[in-house]
Length: 128
Image (tube, rainbow, N blue to C red; front, side, top):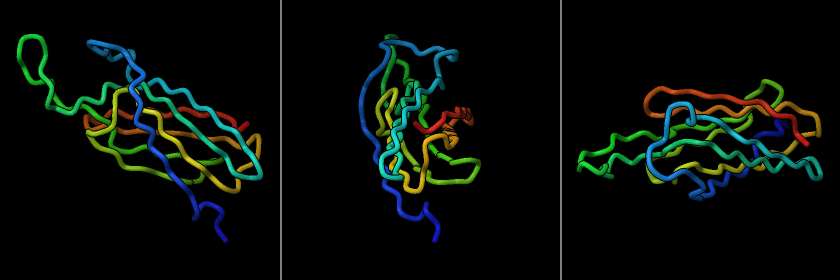
């Protein structure tokens, strides 16, 4: 039986971010936290991203173009474990949570996201 068939994904909508413009250097950094209890990893990922809906206007009245994360995926020791698709409704600097069964402390967790402008970022962490 594949241990990754039964997963729970939670997208926590939290605004944790900067105000005003977000510069390209800020986009994409991630903080990955994990805690393994009884073979299930509770993984939380904070992603720095502006998550613009395309509906806001800047100070001069111009529409700010849409710029948002479309997919977030996680792999364990190089094997796909879970993914989630998101859209414009997610807040700036979102926190994405995964509960992954069959994980042991020391397993390598790789999280990758792709946004609507084609930017991709991945980070690897060790399950704790």
